[in-house]
Amino acid sequence: MSFLLDTMKKMEPLFEKGGRLEKLRSVYDGFATFLYVPDRVTTRGAHIRDYMDMKRTMIIVVIALIPALLFGSYNIGLQHTRAFGIVDWSLMQMFWFGFLKILPLIIVSYVTGLGIEFVAAQIRGHEINEGYLVTGMLIPLIMPIDVPLWMLAVSVAFAVIIGKEIFGGTGMNILNPALTARAFLFFSYPAWMSGDTVWIEGLTKGGAIDAFSGATPLAVAKLDGIARMPSAMEMFVGTIPGSVGETSVIAILIGALILLVTGVGSWRIMLSMTLGALGMGLLLNLTGGNEYTQIPAYYHLIMGGFAFGTVFMATDPVSAAQTNTGKFIYGALTGILVVIIRVFNPAYPEGTMLAILLMNVMAPLIDHYVVQANIRRRVKRVRTA
Amino acid sequence: MENVEKEPLFSAKYRKLLTNPLGQDNPITVQVLGICSALAVTVKMNPAIVMAISVMVVLAVSNVAIAALRTMIPGRIRIIVQLVVIATMVIIVDQFLKAFAFDISKQLSVFVGLIITNCIIMGRLEAFAMANKPWPAFLDGLGNAWGYGAILIIVSFFREFLGSGSIMGFPVMEKIGVYNWGYEDNGMMILPPMALITVGLIIWVQRSRNKTLIEENK
Image 1 (cartoon, rainbow over the protein chains, first blue to last red):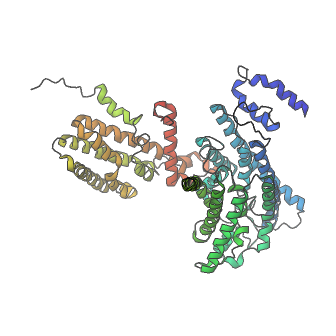
Image 2: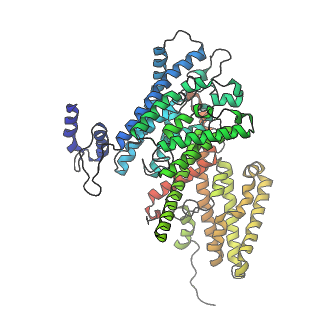
């Protein structure tokens, strides 16, 4: 490892002011701080400095995503064997098949996104933002496996430029960039983001065995009725069609555990969002209305993208509410909205993406009123004392 | 007879009336007026062009009419007088389109009628025609309508090209044959949000080229 460090040190003068490669300073800086903890100290202001800078935070989220990625790879293979009637694949074979299928998505996502980030950092003379490390991993996990790669690249470019760079880069964006990419794809090329063929590798080209449906549980509930849905156990384990990383609640819970133990993810948002969805589900169970309201409330937590959205999307520290009270309000409203969209909007079987994006927009408003309420309370206290 | 030096028809000042609204005084990207119709009629280029021409006729003629009447209009009821003039012009344009371009008229639907409420027109009548002679008012009307129309046409070009794969109804993408390579039209370009984003991008480009338009941070 010291070889790498030595090389980096030797190259450093090139990128300093006046060096030959001065223009690429932020590229060097990005790589150097990615590999090693920087030895710079603060010169003024607060002198408390933690190793837990943004890069480490982001890496922990990426680590937390690995279980979902691994299970997603296996599930791609599993769904493929089911759809095409293959019976003799071993577990490793399915996993390897799926892994090779998802690898291009990951590469395209990172190359496009990081490419734009690098260019933007050079133009602005900023450091390269680390935010894309997580976004680039999240995006392939919330895509259907059969999405064409150029569409993926276009939506990543849209999300990074319109969703993030315009507002000033990482930390300034209003919307979660990964969900922006998904929403762009969803509205731009709906044929590739819904229906019952895109969720399983190879199914868009046809050739599935008879009477096989690759619809997600949410779509099944809408089209064929609740009785035809997969069992709760299947949805919990994740052996169902769906976006790559969203199917397995177990894998996502492992990720959630990592985020909560390290303190990277907000337990307030996860808890309140789960309770919000559960509460709204129970309420709808009681009131009735359409057939869809009769889905058991806990089903909402394990089907579709709810678990993934709750753990990895809604907790995005940039686009979520910042105040602690605000986080509870933000989470609960997101959970309630997810269920409302799922149940009452026939056009969108899945509501998690839209609910989180909508609440992203509302988050600053929630924060504003929480802060105002606190100010009012304290002013009152001063006056009475 | 007082001896006032007559200004030439296309003096530098008058030419500015025509060119300013195209750039640094654009009704849509700088004054942010008339956004509503810019979002609604820019899915395809043909309706956008017809809309631009309609607005140009209405704005130029009503500007001249109000400028000619400006000394006779009582200040208290000037808005109503302006509205009567605009409404008359809009109805004439609407009937004309129904008679000679029925298909486009159907595509534009209520938006021809809604030219009456287009902020650009009321804005120009109030701000310019009420205080200037007919000829500069005419140039101002043409200039602002052209500035409005230019943005409409740029936006509709991108929305039609990327959203429907054609330019003015001619299927370019199909002729090139990109569909065979797996290309697909972007469905979101047809939806209103993308018109807003496209206008936003135009504003971005304009402001990064013309720094005087950027407000100072307070």
